[in-house]
Image (cartoon, rainbow, N blue to C red; front, side, top):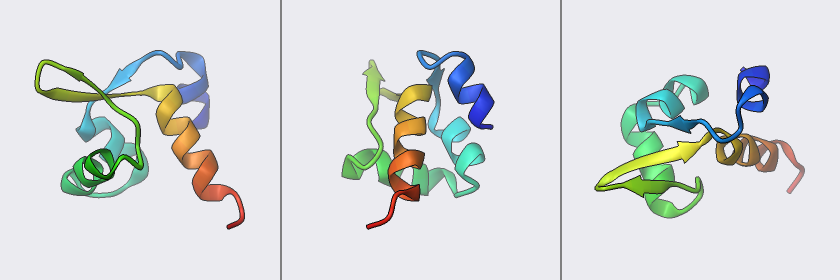
Length: 65
């Protein structure tokens, strides 16, 4: 999965794609976007997450608090 994110960091992922990669529900992916924990851009009303933003989110989650 990490290799996929690094291959094309500008790739746009749907919330469904994000949910599958994080192994969470679709609604949890939307919640992360709505809370601002996962950076997203909007194409019309549809949220999209850059692969690089997902990689940043994962890196932050792995770092000690």
